[in-house]
Length: 430
Ligand code: UGA
Image (cartoon, rainbow, N blue to C red; front, side):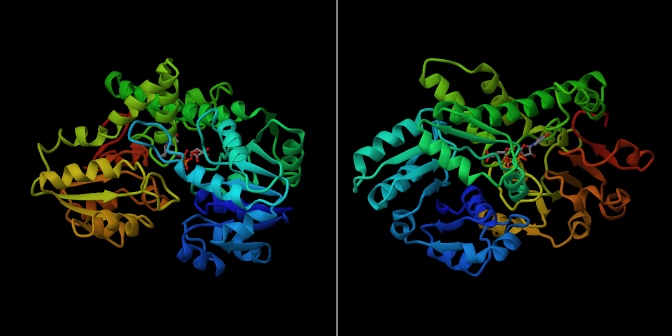
């Protein structure tokens, strides 16, 4: 099929490339000429494992352009995959979505389906339809469908090609049939529903996962107080298929471009409708506090950080991405710097982005070893494999004071028996 995709961020680009890999002819549209130029060379402007390779294998079916008119005018399907960032009041900013809708309205010359992949508040697809009808330049039928995305950064290609489910929210048989055809070569259960339910499935899924993490973090905090071990507790819980063993990792709070934004957006939507979604409000609050967990623990060992050398392992919000959005490191490092600490940091891919925020204030190191050298305390914010695989005696050998505060429970407690290392993690004995 002839498909256009608006936006080449995580959602748009991965969707476009994966659809091309299934045999569709895909044109990816972006406003950024530099980005388009890079993609034309078969290079992904975002760090996402496996994406470059898949792009290169499918370049014959991929076109990259800033010329939206030519991309949209005769496309059978147009996916919208632009960002919906959080506004100051917690609601979703839909200006990028509407900009694309406007461009589609002025360009389309044939009957087509406009598919909203961006995460949008419930009811937005209906509003887009009204807006589209009002702004259409040519007399053609445009169907609006919701098709939320469930890919996670770092595993985006796999999550798209082996989707857990494909949700299609459509009001016309035409839209349903076209989308079923788009996805005919994808092996995944298909949930066909109306647009509002599809929109809600996305928020309800993300917010449920955020809730699960906040719940487990609260249980972890209680484990520390009552002398239980969260790793054993969640293992014991996970065998119950009704609970499941995924997303039960306690830590220093969830970050990223989705959970923080989508929990706030649903909470905002509820209160806008004179309703309250108490569980999600609680999840947000728990998460905000959890991000300060290690700093609070650190005060047990040092009153403040002035004059100390602090080692930081991991800057990104999770491994497998260079994305820093809502990363716990971003709320912790400013406190260290404000206290007057010398901060040394290591991250395999996040440093370039961090330098845009802290060009001078942090000493970026090329290796974990260099970071740990002469440090008085070490914070682990991201569970990169390089950190998990490190022999814990390296901390002992290199640090001035081997105190490790681990926000991601990277090591087994046994590893520290009689080591002389202070190891303080989440939900476990010190
Ligand atoms: C998340 C969802 O997992 C995707 O299904 C969804 O499509 C995506 O949002 C989106 O809406 O676009 P993502 O934000 O990329 O994906 O990352 P996750 O792997 O879900 O991790 C989010 C945060 O939760 C990370 O900070 C991670 O460290 C934290 N987390 C995750 C935990 O603290 N514990 C866990 O057990 C799992």
